[in-house]
Length: 469
Ligand SMILES: [Zn+2]
Image 1 (cartoon, rainbow, N blue to C red):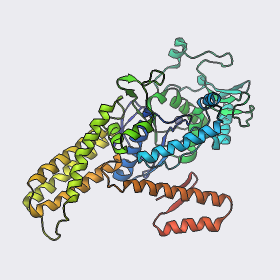
Image 2: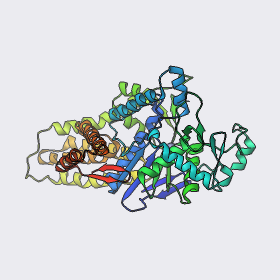
Image 3: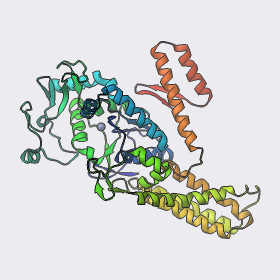
Image 4: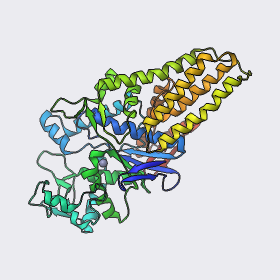
């Protein structure tokens, strides 16, 4: 499979470095508000990539998405609404998980919260200070951009250009206007944690470095997010990680294109804006997924109700054919399909191969969906003429549509929602077991594991938490 790597500015052959496990990290939500329709894009496209790698490449995917539950935006919102930062974060974290459920997206392997990992972030900042890559001024700690020779390698921005541009606000405390905050001292009333530089909170860029390394281990394969994160967020993550460890950070950086709202840049203040849950109230999850996947993930996507209506029709074209074929009485077994049926069957591998070629080409879901649509059209043509025992091969076409639709979260049996629930329930048991172990109630914790094993669910405790297969 080839994926476009922002780090090298070109498509490259992708495979997990260790040959088996893909370690993938996607920047998650800052939980100060509900997610908007732009936030849905990385969830849907990188979720599809995850499932494609698992199903069609046979690799295990560790998929980590953080939850930013302390941040300037949360503090501002807290001041405005009077709710505490914790209460806001709890409310919108829950809303985010609800949204994943509605969307039918599998939960990440881990969803670490920033506030539960502050000591690890302090340790990273300390390492950077010790190595001369960071300095403290009045309780704030800044990254010394000039000390990292590779700064700008992801975004292609040269530091000299930026200094001339002088668009970065000048602070008297910084040695250089490009230096960014690693640790922010707390103002009165703000959330704070202890550190060698006084009470404060870590910067967002530090969070993702710590959480990705802690929950994925090494080697780090894919770091993904929206293209608005290339600079400064991902650039600043690389600067910290590589300076601290002396080793390359992620091998691949993937970025999805931005979303426009009815042809204009999305902006809350201009009213060109919609929340994700509002859209999911108007359109079902499959329609929304189909819409997002019907445009290549790197291109800009124009969000519109008309676009969603089109997606709904395209989806219905496939589902109607599937439903009608499945409504036919089950074919009698033992009777061979005739020459026409055999000829139709021989066409199926070609559609599968085309779908794989498209998906292997930088996750071209547009081409993948087109291959499925043509498979359905061909099936429909054959269906209109097929007689007798020839009709039994129609079900093979349906099975193929379902197989190819699986990574996209489309065309599945209606029980698919059940599958999402199953995933949630297993996660819930894993969380409970972890709590019990913390309380040293090992007998009960082991019972949960044993019962799950009996049900065919195997738990594996790793340094990064428990994973299940
Ligand atoms: Zn991030």
